[in-house]
Length: 188
Image 1 (cartoon, rainbow, N blue to C red):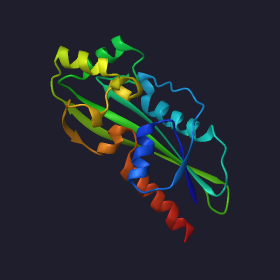
Image 2: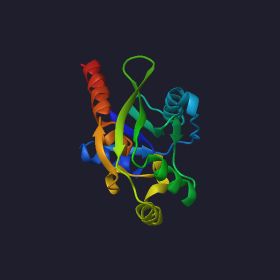
Image 3: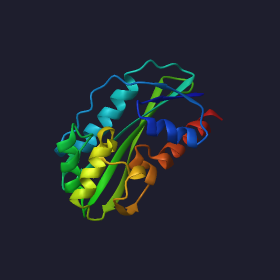
Image 4: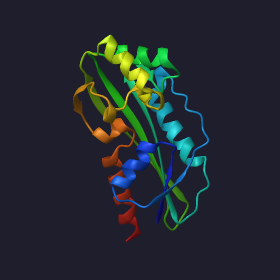
């Protein structure tokens, strides 16, 4: 079975390479709209829409994922500019927040296509971030393609993480491995 990553994320590609997996990439054509009050449903809907937005062949397994940050009941997606990136970091400063990712997998094994999805959650605790640190990080350009306006791999803000580190990067690797093992076991 050939793996296909349905994502434009360079971090997801890097993580799959790190796992030693061979895969191709298809870019999804779906908007990402997550509402505060319904973020888990919207997160799953978005991941499933991504996986269904590209062509599928029976010999493939498609992987799609969507990631958000939730702090104080507010969903923080990718910041739309300098002001919003700084606002996100001020909100996260000195607080605990949660990173949610919905991983979707589509495959076919002797029947109709099967689509599975699972939501992973990681709690992240930030230390207090000074205004100078926020300004420097925002100016670096790092926040703009990342949920919550930060990358765990390129910031020094986290003082503690409870859960999958890779989930915070945008791909819950342990969930992915479990899902791929389940597919492999069905092939036997």
